[in-house]
Image (cartoon, rainbow, N blue to C red; front, side, top):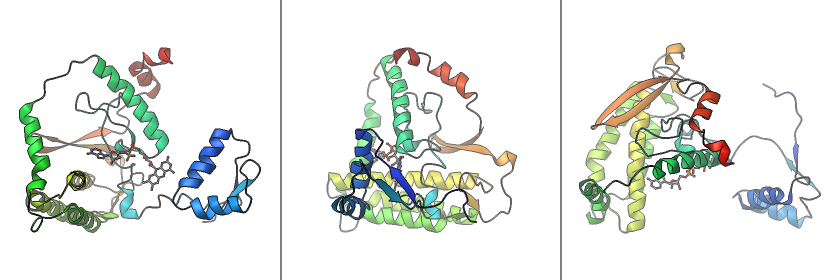
Length: 296
Ligand SMILES: Cc1cc2nc3c(=O)[nH]c(=O)nc-3n(C[C@H](O)[C@H](O)[C@H](O)COP(=O)(O)OP(=O)(O)OC[C@H]3O[C@@H](n4cnc5c(N)ncnc54)[C@H](O)[C@@H]3O)c2cc1C
C-alpha cells in the first residue's frame, strides 16, 4: 500500500530550538548514537553543516533502531509486565514498579514519568512505615543460593554464557513468532531441565561473572513466566503481537483480558482481569494523588 499525505525527505529544523535542546538533539543524540557519529555528525560538521542555520535532511524510513525480529517483539515492553495498582505498587507491599518493567511500556519518557510517580508513592509509603527486622533465615538461604556457583568446579560446570545461549535458543525454537501448545510445553520442559540439572552445576570465576550468572537465572525465570502466559492465552491477539498457529480462532470478546500469573507457596497461580479493571482515569488519578498538586 502506498502511504499518502507526505513527500519525502523530511527536514529537521533545529535552528529555532532553544540552544540546550539543539545541543541534546544534534550534539548528544546524533553525536553519540552508535550509527550516526561519523557518517552524520562528523562528516556534516566537516562539510560546514551548522545546526543553528541549516536544516537536517532525513528520509523518514521508519524507526530502525529497534527493528525487532517478530520473535523478539514479545520481549520488548509492550506485551507483559508487573501487574500494579494506582500507585504503581505490586502485590508485594512496599515494592513499586516503573519503566519497562510495566505492562505496555516502551520509551525513556514513560520510564522517567513512571519512575517519578512510583518513587513519589514509594517514599510516601516508606515515610509511614517502620523498618522490619531482617529475617536471618531467609537472607541466609539467599546467600547460599547466590554464592553457590563460586564453589563449583569450572572444569565440569557450566558458565553464564552457555546457559544464556541455551535459554535463548530454547525460547527461539519453542516460543517463536507463532505459538503452538505442543512447542510451548516442550520449551517449558527444557527450562525445567536447565533449572533442575544445569543451574545447580554452574560456576563463576569472580564477582563479575557471578552477577552475569545471577542475571541469567532471572532470565530463566522470566522465560518460564512468558511460556506459561503464552499457554494461558488461547487466541491470537493483534494488539499484543501474539499469534497462535494451532487454532484458527481469532480473538473474541472473552479473550480480550489481562492474564495475571504469580507464584504462591511454590505453586503457579493464574487469574484474569478485564482490560478496563483500573476504572475511571480522572477520578482515580485524583483519588490516589490528592496530596500531589499542592506540592508543585
Ligand atoms: C534498541 C533500543 C532502542 C531504543 N530507542 C529508544 C528511543 O530512541 N527513545 C526512547 O524513548 N526509548 C528508546 N528505547 C527504550 C528505552 O531504552 C527504555 O524504555 C528505557 O531505557 C527503560 O528504562 P528502565 O529504567 O525502565 O529500564 P532499563 O533502562 O532497562 O534499566 C533497568 C536496569 O535494571 C538492571 N537490572 C535488571 N535486572 C536486575 C536485577 N535482578 N538486579 C539488579 N539490576 C537489575 C538492568 O541491568 C538495567 O540497568 C530503546 C530501547 C532499545 C532496546
